[in-house]
Image 1 (cartoon, rainbow, N blue to C red):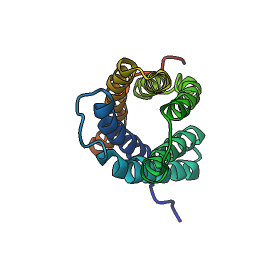
Image 2 (image 1 turned 120 degrees about the vertical axis):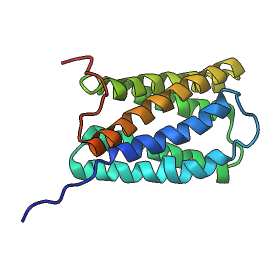
Image 3 (image 1 turned 180 degrees about the horizontal axis):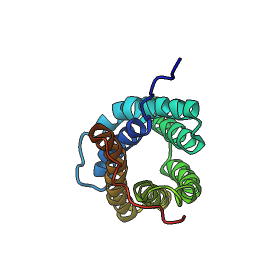
Amino acid sequence: MTEQKRANPAPLGLSGFALTTLVLSVFNAGLLSQGSSVVVGLAAFYGGLAQLLAGILEWRAGNTFGYTAFFTYGAFWEWYFVTSMFISGVTAQGVGLVLIAFGIFTLVMWFGTFKSNLGLFATFLLLWITFFLLGIGSMVSSTALIHAGGYVGILTAIAAWYTGLAMVVAEALGTNPPLGRPIMK
């Protein structure tokens, strides 16, 4: 009996992360000032649930990096959802601390991309910068740092979306995805 081909869960996880990050980052950058509550539903389902599912599928495929990344960022979006919907009295400094902690996690995960493709390397590089800008901006109440974090977050979303969608399109066309060579061999 032959094993059935399984879909790659990474494009789902990257797309859920990218779209949710893009929408929140537009508000963080100050490009839109009303309607930020739309992020809450995305955080629960596309940023959160879809990434949790992608993480479980990466675990099943034996991909420790993909499992850890998708499950962690899926849990981040679920935290964002629960905090936004059900927890009152959250301070900007508390949120800043969480964002900085995720920045530290992402910085360490970024080292794991050095032998991966350039798309993933850029996504994690931009993401840890985003987390630190937003976290420090929240801790010191700096609108300028939060706006900067929003703009870097937009770039992060673009890099993640490109990486995930390049995989989908390449598979559909029967080619290798144009994701760039690893920075380390």
